[in-house]
Image 1 (cartoon, rainbow, N blue to C red):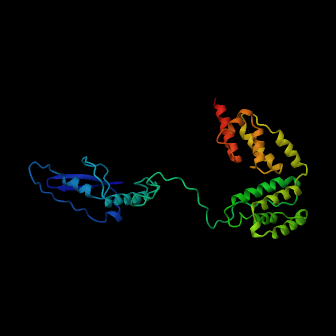
Image 2 (cartoon, helix red, strand yellow; image 1 turned 180 degrees about the vertical axis):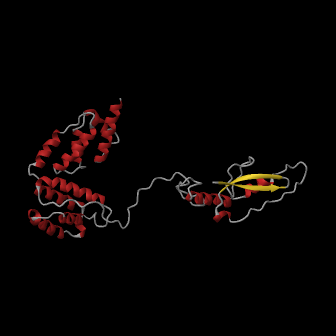
Image 3 (cartoon, rainbow, N blue to C red; image 1 turned 135 degrees about the vertical axis):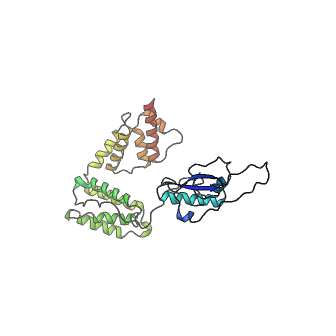
Length: 302
């Protein structure tokens, strides 16, 4: 919203358009300076222009073009304060995030590299608890899948990254006479593990014992046969990756091991596998899949 300000100097009278005054900044009057012409050759200066340039108000349209001059630190910070104040009212910066007076931080100066997101502090458990498992073999794989998603969602919650506590947490989701004896035995096993031995392999051992006890005894051997026969159909690389990972889990193999990376390569078409193994040679499973995806996409575009 703009207001008019009448300026009178001698016989002349002009109107100036100024923005809505802000009490925090404009709670004072701007003195109009006087100027005495020193000589006839000196160009007469418009007192109104001088007043406007020395005023902290934001002018909608300057009355006369002026030569750009370097702002002093005072007016630089004053302009930033105006932008912040008007930004809070819906004007000025247009609602964009304002930077602090004095030039901003390192990011404002440009070129700062992106930083990883810091782990949140005092985080509480989120998401819905996995469904209770009562020992049904047909639901064992679904139950463990829900457990893994719940644990991943709450990884930064205190205690959730401890293999021992993860095992104990899962045991609390297993209830009923079909699982009571087995959970009692697993609890005794966990209690014997000291803090120095509390490593990731504890969770892997628990998962293997769970699948051995509650899944079809023939399911893992069937999945291993399917894994050997699994081949990618060009150019359905996404379906191949999803089926490969699911079959590896059913076969009770460790996804990301050297043997499984080699098995992943064996299911690819020869030209795609050749692209994957080009320098730089992939090491992790994720690097294998990324190079396979890039190879297939480049061939589809040809």
